[in-house]
Length: 212
Image (cartoon, rainbow, N blue to C red; front, side, top):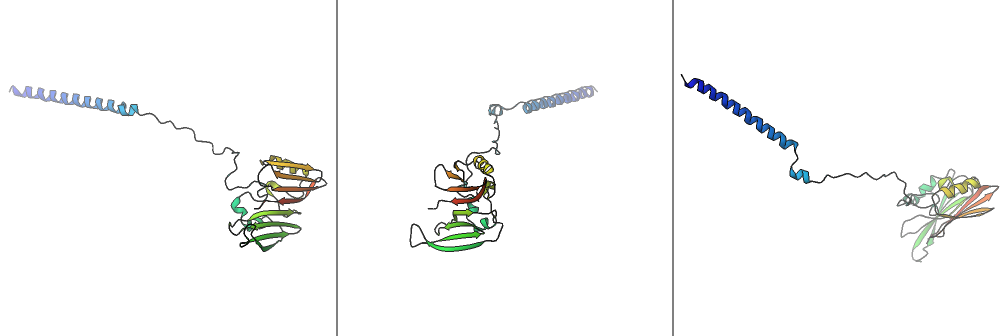
């Protein structure tokens, strides 16, 4: 009869101890979760720097491009090696001639000169066999059937011509006379663009490229 109350008291004490133990385990687990370990605390935080602005304008010419005196019609070097590129720029009927010529350095090699004619204008290309390139060596433009880069063209005013030559971002030497404006390279290959003037407007454009 005396054991039943003691037994009830014992059971209540055991429950209290279990609850206290669970409370301690929960408190300890929470503390471990909230506080970083020593390894995490000692690990430096990586700071990301701002990405460079890819839209910024670069003063360096992009790879694979030609300057105005390198080719006054096409800036892309790969496109400049295709006759179709020039066909697409001519707004009238034209003819194409292909003539075999002796290589300038080796007589045993035969190269090709292509000539595109339209109206009183002509484009002449030298195609060396060993390289597969198509090099513009002469252009004589006497009409409005084709335009050069930067909208340079027959019929434009002298003032517009000078403005476009000076604002085109090209390092050109510009020589001026009452009848002609010449754009040439300050250094490098001796290519030139001649703009002949009549009554204050461009009447003819002659390009003399450099081919070796």
